[in-house]
Length: 125
Image 1 (cartoon, rainbow, N blue to C red):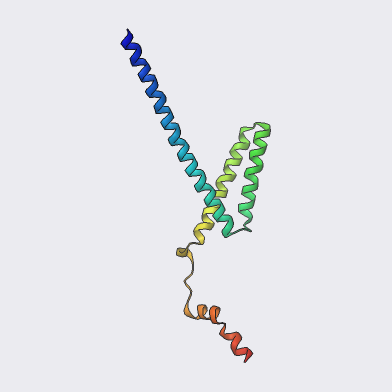
Image 2: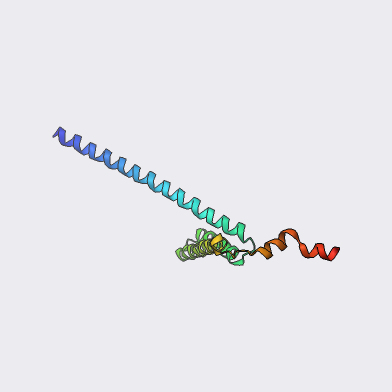
């Protein structure tokens, strides 16, 4: 009988260890995802600081989350999550639109005109 009790204790301790391991891995994944989300949102705001969609979705998400905490209504949390999803999608779209892949390649005349300002020199002379 004593060996059965020892086996139960070992099983319980290994299950607790496994639960702690899963909790640590889940926490690490949650931190990584949170940092990526914050990075995407900050990149979106830095590239397009006057974007009304970003500001409205951020304000809506914060307002609905505060109202959900005050009232306890679950549908307000769903609305806040949807606003957060819109914020992430728009911020990622803005971030992607500023990538060099989607930018127009400058031609030689435009680049020369922007750097040298040839028209201004000839008009001044």
